[in-house]
Length: 68
Image: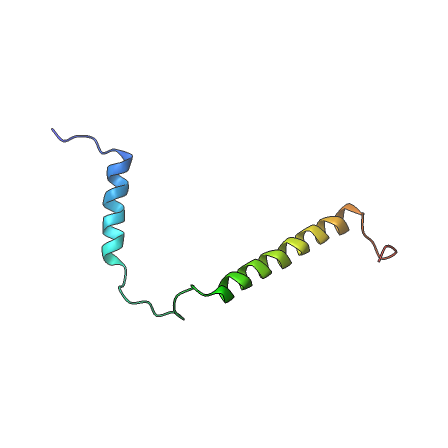
Protein backbone atom coordinates (compact mmCIF):
# COMPACT_ATOMS: atom_id res chain seq x y z
CA UNK A 1 0.00 0.00 0.00
CA UNK A 2 1.32 3.42 -0.93
CA UNK A 3 1.82 6.13 1.67
CA UNK A 4 -0.36 9.23 1.36
CA UNK A 5 1.45 12.23 -0.05
CA UNK A 6 2.19 15.07 2.33
CA UNK A 7 2.26 18.72 1.38
CA UNK A 8 6.04 18.85 1.62
CA UNK A 9 6.53 15.86 -0.69
CA UNK A 10 4.10 17.31 -3.25
CA UNK A 11 5.87 20.67 -3.06
CA UNK A 12 9.26 19.01 -3.47
CA UNK A 13 8.10 17.04 -6.52
CA UNK A 14 6.54 20.14 -8.08
CA UNK A 15 9.66 22.22 -7.49
CA UNK A 16 11.84 19.51 -8.98
CA UNK A 17 9.67 19.31 -12.11
CA UNK A 18 9.53 23.09 -12.52
CA UNK A 19 13.24 23.60 -11.96
CA UNK A 20 14.13 21.09 -14.65
CA UNK A 21 11.85 22.81 -17.18
CA UNK A 22 13.28 26.30 -16.70
CA UNK A 23 15.62 27.60 -19.39
CA UNK A 24 19.25 27.82 -18.40
CA UNK A 25 19.95 31.05 -20.27
CA UNK A 26 18.56 34.44 -19.35
CA UNK A 27 17.59 36.70 -22.22
CA UNK A 28 17.10 39.86 -20.20
CA UNK A 29 19.15 42.95 -19.62
CA UNK A 30 21.40 41.21 -17.16
CA UNK A 31 21.58 40.99 -13.44
CA UNK A 32 20.13 43.56 -11.07
CA UNK A 33 23.16 44.02 -8.87
CA UNK A 34 24.17 47.66 -9.14
CA UNK A 35 23.43 50.56 -6.82
CA UNK A 36 21.44 52.22 -9.59
CA UNK A 37 18.80 49.52 -9.41
CA UNK A 38 18.34 49.96 -5.67
CA UNK A 39 18.20 53.73 -6.02
CA UNK A 40 15.57 53.48 -8.74
CA UNK A 41 13.43 51.06 -6.71
CA UNK A 42 13.61 53.27 -3.60
CA UNK A 43 12.87 56.43 -5.61
CA UNK A 44 9.85 54.92 -7.30
CA UNK A 45 8.59 53.54 -3.98
CA UNK A 46 8.86 57.00 -2.45
CA UNK A 47 7.02 58.61 -5.37
CA UNK A 48 4.22 56.03 -5.20
CA UNK A 49 3.95 56.42 -1.42
CA UNK A 50 3.57 60.19 -1.69
CA UNK A 51 1.05 59.84 -4.52
CA UNK A 52 -1.09 57.49 -2.42
CA UNK A 53 -0.96 59.69 0.66
CA UNK A 54 -1.72 62.79 -1.42
CA UNK A 55 -4.71 61.11 -3.00
CA UNK A 56 -5.92 60.11 0.46
CA UNK A 57 -5.69 63.73 1.64
CA UNK A 58 -7.61 64.97 -1.40
CA UNK A 59 -10.33 62.38 -0.98
CA UNK A 60 -10.71 63.03 2.75
CA UNK A 61 -11.11 66.75 2.18
CA UNK A 62 -7.99 67.78 4.10
CA UNK A 63 -6.48 69.27 0.97
CA UNK A 64 -8.40 71.32 -1.58
CA UNK A 65 -7.77 74.11 -4.05
CA UNK A 66 -7.96 76.86 -1.41
CA UNK A 67 -5.26 75.19 0.74
CA UNK A 68 -2.70 75.07 -2.03
